[in-house]
Length: 278
Image (cartoon, rainbow, N blue to C red; front, side):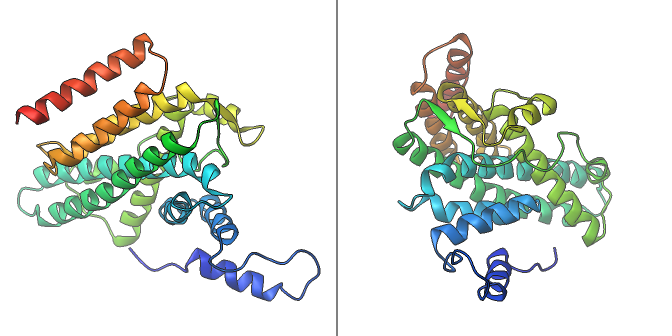
């Protein structure tokens, strides 16, 4: 989909050029502070794939940024997985619509499902770490309202209808769908699903805090949604489906039971029961 300059490399060049100026010394390349700054830079430009890569480096450490990185990393990896999943479905529909030449669409489906699986597994890993290490009553979201829209990009319908696009158009669609996945996921994790205006209002003051039960409920819903990637009509990997479902149950079990949490728990347990019977 084209090349791009590494965000960490760009930061290194910038700080090298300004190192002679007075003031605090910039963080050393490769340090947690450097990676945190790189994540913020790529997030600001809407490059959520690179942002997720940077954040995953931090959540696996015991640095001073790890706790703040985990909720952000969960939102990013979940949103990317959902974006890949939705885009793969569009290409799957496109393959059916383009009966004379379905191969290019099938190749995209395979690639998107593989990328989606990587993000889904990173999401499950991050949730596991977050449940184990982030115990505050409120979850601080150390990031801004994400770039993107909840609305489906116009080109998504073209793909679903069996129309192939130029590489530049396809890359724009990929980015738009990944951003859409993150926007929807952040709304779900902040208790403002499908309401971009309310989500934006929440972030206006900067780094909002979400009650831990509400945030964990959003995590569980996202884990359940993304687990569809491993269903029998897609990758057909029941072990990984069970992994995500179990992680969702762990999140639900860490919250007080409500009508909504019980309904979601029953739904997930029913899905698990099906995989064990298969």
